[in-house]
Length: 324
Ligand SMILES: Cc1ncc(COP(=O)(O)O)c(C=O)c1O
Image (cartoon, rainbow, N blue to C red; front, side, top):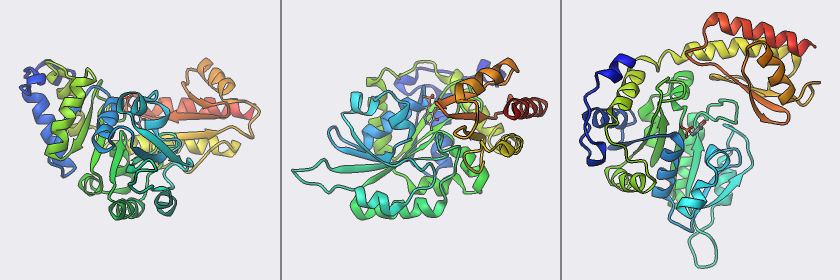
């Protein structure tokens, strides 16, 4: 990857003249069966650009209460897009399309009109859960019936593709816009893309520049992304297997929040003598890093830089700590 970055051909991407960025954008658009894609510095920016494409200022986005777009993007949809958000209760990947359908507000002069639905695949706070294809199809139908757009925060859509064997183009067909990330499981240092129609991506380019996300010789970064796509997608199955091993190690202590499907192991410490901070502190002492999500919720993640031996060490250390 470093070699690909060092030898990348570059140009000024603000003028659309970086051949490596252009190649990455064309490649990702084709993967999802869409017309175009736009390289952005981060997943958060890619999401926010996409949301501005599908929800005009003052109008409404529906998503779940744990969605990254309303949890970890520091109010950007409201602050930069003037977007009003309403959420259905957090159920991770387990969405009930009828609940979503019941929340839609029609166009009119007396209520905030709903313009789009956002889903997250896989679901970060939902423990890396995969939304089933049948649910997504049902949501698409709900959106079509009401004339709404559907955005997919696909930061980890590669994991869903590998876990469920759903072709990326099959996912692409269901969404008006997607954001997909190269810098998580795929292991590139930087970068996400907004995927959509030619018209939407042309507008996305303007919004990206407005947000300060127009980069110049970005080909060095796009080269890393192209390398990641070529070499790091199918191997995600190894990370999923490592997460399953960690899940198996902690399961006897009653702390597993859900069934592990991908590379996230969500912990529910409600019945555990240790709270999330105490667990994370004890694990850190043993060289195991854990994300604290809430007072009694935490998250373990596996990725390509966590080798098998490290997974074994982490499993042993966590079992020892949880045993007390
Ligand atoms: C589901 C999801 N979407 C978007 C993002 C944002 O990505 P970034 O950190 O590149 O802004 C993240 C980051 O963790 C995420 O988990």
